[in-house]
Image 1: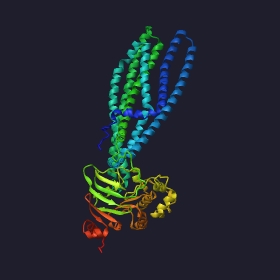
Image 2: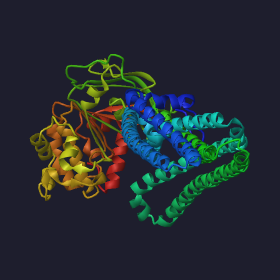
Image 3: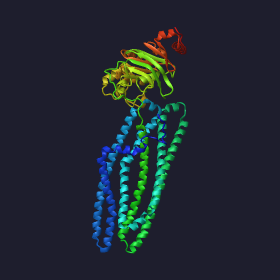
Image 4: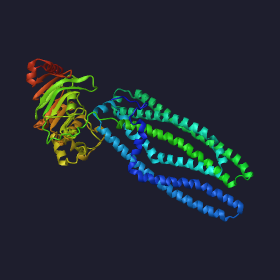
Length: 593
């Protein structure tokens, strides 16, 4: 997987990010077409109002008839009413359409993130993904809800103003355009600087979100080791970097806007100076001069907005590049073109000469082969880094192997439907993740096919019902993020109940009882014995006392299976297992029998 930085995004979508963003508008072309029609109508009203007043001034000067003023006022009021109705309609329709598109983009992005392989999440900070799905998607809202339509309106407005001014008096129009080259230069410079500042501020925002996500989750460790001051200094540094980036962004706008306003004022002064002489020389009427003075004010405003909108569009494109960089990520573990769906997974597991590495180079498993029959209880033991947990991850196909084959019930694991495979495996891990919600929702995990009776039965099996029923709301008791209000043992019991409720064919326990006290462990031991009957069970444990009754114990060392057999057979071999056993007995302060 290529390492990409936020400062220099090299996405395959980079050159066509705008086209990809426009593709989301396809289902809404009728609404967008209506918006563009309303924009054209509003532009026509904006162009017509100065002409209406200018003509009234000339007519009143010639005839001195006050009825002209009354008629003009009525016409002007009608134009304003139509402008109001069209503007409200266009704004409502555009905002509604924009929000629907943003909803679609965020939904598709999250669905894609869910499809990515475990390796991607091993390498990508959570805060970065949160920024992409929230802040970067939100940055697109301005484009869909305003920029594209206002961009169209301003371009039409500039062309319309220039055309009308040239028709009224081409010489005075050319005088009005005398400062346009300078405006064009300023706009180009502004766009380049603004794009750079946008990118820096997006990167700084990602940095601070990543920092917050990691450190708030690990706040207890920070407090235990008394690192609050140091972490505050790190946060303060990132916060100041974000502040400086946003300040530079604001400074660019603070300089550009007044410069354009100054140029528009100078242009107006030039037009009034030249136009006044033409009025006195009867070359143009005073109404025409009024129209020009209004058009000059209107002419530079869309130019100014156009430059800012181009910059905002660049910001949206920068966010889009980052979003499509994620969308461009291919899942490393891919579903087969025509996946095999077994009638029922029985639980026969076979590893045949399996080689596996997380980084494609340093192999964690080396030529591993074994067979686990349905209903067998098999344990893996060994030193840290021997490859025990990797085997468990491969059985659920969270990673794909580089060499060899893994079979479930005689079918290559890469051909089996991932959904069926993972639904047949019940994983009970040392690090239990509890979601915000209720106890019932955590056990059910939003599988509505699991009834409340089945949830209660599963909780009773693992003796979780003892503490659940003592809670004020029982199974409807609110659960905070990560289940922080429960003890480690209670969280583990909930995970056991969750696994039982989903009725797996294969049980996988990775140090599942490591965080449970001795009393709690005794409570669930009987339930585990019942649970393991008729199910293939694979255990990883450092405490050898928990796996002594396994049908087969496999001893891992440096990615290979060095010994295998039951507890007594391995002790008789006088090898690695016996050394581990004696070392643990000595550590516990006991004497071997």
